[in-house]
Length: 291
Image 1 (cartoon, rainbow, N blue to C red):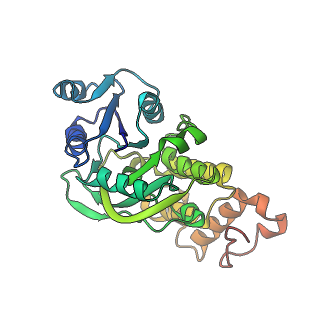
Image 2 (cartoon, rainbow, N blue to C red; image 1 turned 90 degrees about the vertical axis):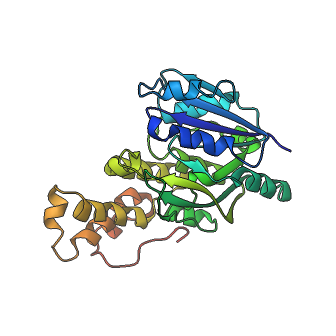
């Protein structure tokens, strides 16, 4: 029975922290090492952690952000199988047992990820995470790996190194791309393993523009290109979801949104194009990976 190490990075998430902890402690699989790395919270989180006594390891002290907290926890982890669970997400009761079973059956798999539901503040299911069977092109098109439903072997973690501490939003996405580029075998399993929480404080919801630009940089640096899907989503946000800004005022111009997405796509992927390709009217086929 392999030891499974779960790390929870946390900062001022007392509202959800106990639900996250209980989801790990109530797993049907028992050979678990659980480590909570709190960034010096001031909202009562240390008191919640203290109330569990010695049932798991924890620390509460200032850190340099989420990636640093995850790396701190993983550095002390002893498990053969690793995962991290944010302090507002939840593992379903058989998640770890299921993951271990797949790893035992498939010794050549380096990463497995399952399905997951989106939930709100009160644990009401509000949707499904868009997981899908894995290919590198699918990952580059959209992150098909739901982080709280993902587990990986310590061996592949040693090969690719720690999480990138310069990233604020795309740290898990960049990690999956690096594992793929290191020839890690990533597999999807069709079983629901986790809940991913969406609430008003979620980073990717409140800071969409910074998130998108970080995604662009990660994809180009680690994957070699940025899929057109990300630019289409970014310009939809600027034109329809933001309440101010020039793109919103110009969104009624025929073809404006798609033309701007196409132009930005070709600029970020300019190493794939000649300068003559950059200015054609929007509406043509965008270059796919491998073209």
